[in-house]
Structure formats: C-alpha cells, structure tokens
Length: 211
Image (cartoon, rainbow, N blue to C red):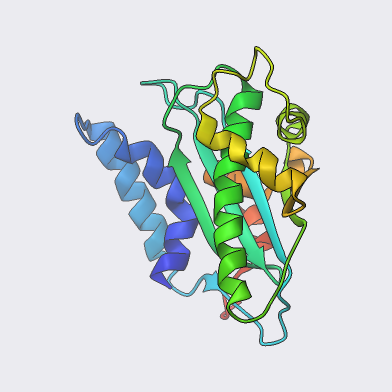
C-alpha cells in the first residue's frame, strides 16, 4: 500500500527533493501538505483482479524545462499489464532539452527501456509480446522515433536515447499518439489540479474499498 501511495505523489516529491540542499520554510510547508494528503487516504491503493490479461501497454510523457533551477525536463511514464498499473517512473532528465519534442523523445526512450525489461520478465513465463504500444502526446517525438535518419535538430540528443528507433523498426514496440487529455503519464511529470489528478488516479486503477 505504501508503494501505491508513493505513486500518487511522486511528482510532488520530485519537486521538493531538488530543493533539499537549500530548503526554505515554504518547502517544508509543501512536504507537510503531501503527508497530510497521504494521512487522509490510508485505504486508497491499486487493486488487481484475478481475471486480468497479459497485454502490455505504456504511456510516456514529459514536461518541458519544468525545473526552474536548471531548466531540465521531467520524464513521466507508466506501464500497465492487463490494464493494471505495474510500474511507473517520475524522474528529472539528465540533460537539458532544447524543445518539447526532444524532451518527449527522451521520455519515450526511457519508457521503451522499461517496456523491454517487462517483456523479458514475461518471456520467462512463456508470454511472448510484440508491437507493444507506447502512447505519447507529441507527434514530433513520434516522427523522430519512426525516422532512422539523424537530422541537424536531433544529432545532439544523446545516443543512448536513439535505441528506441531500432526497437520500432524491429517491431518490438509501436508509438501511438494520444491526446493530452487521455495521457495517463501526465500524473508523473508535474503537479496537477484536483479534478485532473483524481481523474488520472482513477484511470490508473486506484480504488478505495470503503467507497
């Protein structure tokens, strides 16, 4: 249950953790607010039904230059097995992106790596998957991943993120566009308003058995 609760506030933890070297009173207030929220939802968590399937899907997202200190973007990703959330990530990127498309492309590469790891785990149980869908809300990032040719605007992107192209060409994964409204990974990139926050955690399968 603790892991499930962390998933709900991971983006918030990320925002305050970057300021731990020089914390201020306002940062302590933000941390206390997070803990008050967690204290109020002790029974909220992820629930898995025994009839869930083994189809693997993923959502990849990024903000752009969200960190006001170093202007780095935050990668958000979530991975669902049988429509149920099984892993997620919310992490500041290692380098500064020069465009939204670049930030989203880097996030897609990170998401792809996790998808391939999950696929390998499933292969141990004789579950074979291909063309695993990764949903992204940036058409330019999708175009970069589907184009094996390096252009001047993408040559500076670190080589390790370009491996996603090989897996697209090999048919291991497929990138699909999803409108931002339905981008589940949005939860892991930045703080959201209450309405959207509650909508996304519901879509990710978080339930309160007392309701």
